[in-house]
Image (tube, rainbow over all chains, first blue to last red; front, side):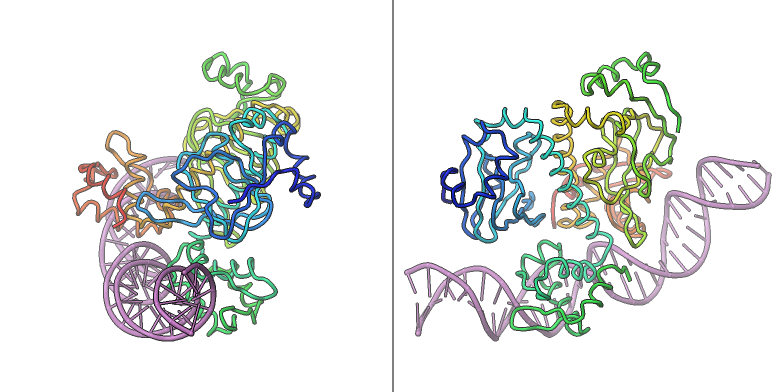
Length: 223
Length: 223
DNA sequence: ATGATAATAGGAGATATCTCATAATGAGGT
DNA sequence: ACCTCATTATGAGATATCTCCTATTATCAT
């Protein structure tokens, strides 16, 4: 983890800095700085108290919930403009999560110690936070109800369509399996089936979508 | 649905009214009133726009998410002090939910039209709302990750322990099955197994817990 | 390069859970 | 009382998904 002075960062990323200024009170920004995390680095650990509110400026990360039985569930992917630690800020978090950088991540770090008061009395911030939490709630609910009402092949079709890039699906299988809540083995099995059914073509480690329409249909239907 | 004047209600339920006064600006309460819903009545319908922020004062209700394929998922039970319509208030709700009264429910109804501005500029309310949403997010996440990381018999044990009353489990089976995300058939099957394993005793339509310790163990273990 | 570690790949067998069908019992309304 | 409809019950068979094993590739640090 590498710390960078906020002013230095501001020089190179004016647009992003402007957005930040719009959404945070000045007093808070005086205490804030920039954190860079490398791929696979922990941003937050489930067994250590959170000290900062992070705002993800660049990169992708993932949230894991750690169960008492030791199992982890990948519960959400984070991207630009996502908060980290916001539930600790408002003191509702009981069981902390692991948050791990997927690739290199740049975050704004706002220390609770000096900024909590300010943030919790700032109307704009609270309004933003409410909207953010509301959206997170909806997104997570949708993800999980899908999980319970559609079987895996339908959900996988939907996921591939959503996350594909230029007709190309190249997520890590282990991550996909964790996020979708199925075993690695079953993911492979289903991917093979998609291949046999002429939905995907394999190219090295990637899968290419060759019948988008059929995938669409599969992603919607319960059948 | 029956409307009641807020002042009339206040006379009979002073304690509750005091709590309300603490959390809502006066200007807002002038426009608010009390709604009574009977058992099984819809408080909010998924296909009708929400006009009020409700605060549940008495009774229990349940939230359903309606899928495109027509299936419904029971996603949460609501009780005293839960909000209804708060996501519409902050304008993040896209797919509305069904909210149905389980027994007779009493709600405070705050009309969006006249009160939205006030509420969204009230610091205390926003702070409360953020905490409420954060807790709802956590609760829902826990519920769903449990669903994916523990098999049904473990989750059912946990659920029974949580919802039992004087060692007595008497929820409606159909509701339990919907909430837990399994088929009705499988719920019965598992309940029978609990009976055979000496965890529960059947008394008419109710189940009595006769081995709480064993239930506890089952609820924790993944095994 | 070389070895070590993680990711991909697939076989075989077990089981948790689902679907569909049918019957019995209970509750509410006329 | 009687009919209707929702709830509780149970059987039989199908399958989606899991666990456990074992190879075969990539990736990465030394």
